[in-house]
Image (cartoon, rainbow, N blue to C red; front, top):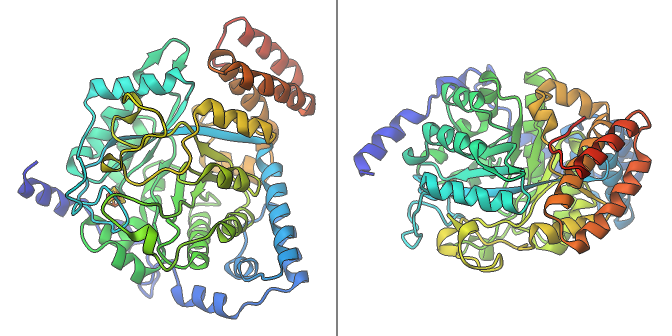
Length: 490
Ligand code: SF4
C-alpha cells in the first residue's frame, strides 16, 4: 500500500472527542501515577492486615488500590504462601477446576506502529510481511479445528490492510468453516483500539472478547516504548473499553506487558483500570486480564536487556495478587511462558491457556513441527510448544478439566449477566457441566488414548462432585455425546 494512503488513513483513526468526555473535571484520566507511587512507597504489610484483605477477596469483592499495595509489599515468605493458597481458593470458588483452552491465530503482520519490543514494528525491516488470503485463512482454521480447537484469539497488527472491514470479513470466514465435527464457536479479537462506529461492526459480526492491552500504565515508559505511530496516543488506547461498552461490547479483556516498567506499578494500573470500568459501567469489569511477560523478538533486544524483567518468583506473585485483587475475572497465561511456569501459575489463579500455539502468519499449515519457530514472521518467541493433546493431558493430571465451552457467550450471558454469576460464585456450578461436556467431546473426537485414560477418570470424579441438580442432564448428555451428538450444553 502506498505510503500516502497509509498516512491519510492514520490521520482519520484517532478521535479525541471519544475519550475526552471521560476525563475528570481536572482533565486527568483514571491512572493517577502519584497515588500509585505513593501507595507503593508507603504502605507496609503486616500479617493481620494481609489476612483481612485475603478474607475480603474470598468474599469475591474487588480490592482497593491500597489493599493491593499491601499484598504487593508483603515480604514474609509465610504470608506469601498464604496469598498463593488463597488465590487458588478464590479461583476454585469462582471457576471450579477447569481451564478454558484456545489458540491464537495471527493473520497479518503489517503494522504502522513502532513498539520497541515487537517483531512486527514498522521499522523492523527484517520482518517478512504477510497477510493470509481467504483460502489460506480457511486452511489455517481447518488445521486448528482438526486438532480440536473451538475458540480462537484473532491477532493482527494495526494497519489499513487489517482495518475493521478486514476483521469483519475474517470473522465471518472463520465462523463459516465446518470441518467434520470441528468448528470455531468463539473468536476473541486482539486488535488496535478503534472508534465506537467500528467497534459496533465487530459487535454485529459476533466478536467474543475484545482484547486491547495497555502494555504499561506508566506514561513516561509508554511514551518511550511507543515512539511513533497511532499507538503513541496513551489515552486513545486507555479508553478503548469505554468505547467498546458504548458500542455494546461488554466482554472486555485488558492486559499489561510485564517487563516494560516495574511490575508492581502495572499490577496497580490493571486494578485501577478494572475499578474504573466497574464504577463507570454499573459493576461490569473486565472479563479477562492478561499479563504477558516480555519475550525475545526479531530485531529487538528489549527482552534480554530490560531492567524491569520479571523473574519467575515475582511472576507468580503478580498472578496471585491480580487473582485476589479482581477475584471474579478470567486470567490468561499464554504460551509465551514455558510449560513449567504455566503449570505453576494455573495453581494460583489462571483460568485460560492457549495450546498448540503457532504465531507465525500461516504457521499452522506450515510443514514443520510446533517447536520450529520462525521469528522473521512472529511477534515474539513462544516458551511452550506443547501440542493441544499434551497440554490437555498435563492439565488433567493437575486436576483441571480443559473446557471449550462457549455457552455463556452464545446465550448472551456476558457483561452484567456474567458479572452477576461470577461475583456470586455461581460460574463454577453453572459452567462445570458445560466444561465436562465439551471436554468429553474433545476426548471422543481428538484425544489420544493416553489423554482419554486420564481425562475419562477426571470426568468421572468431577461428575460425582457436580451439583445434584445437574447430574441427570449431564449424564443424559454424556450418553448422547457417546452416540454421536455434538454441541450439547446446559
Ligand atoms: S505490538 Fe502491536 S501495535 Fe505494536 S508494533 Fe507490534 S503489532 Fe504493531
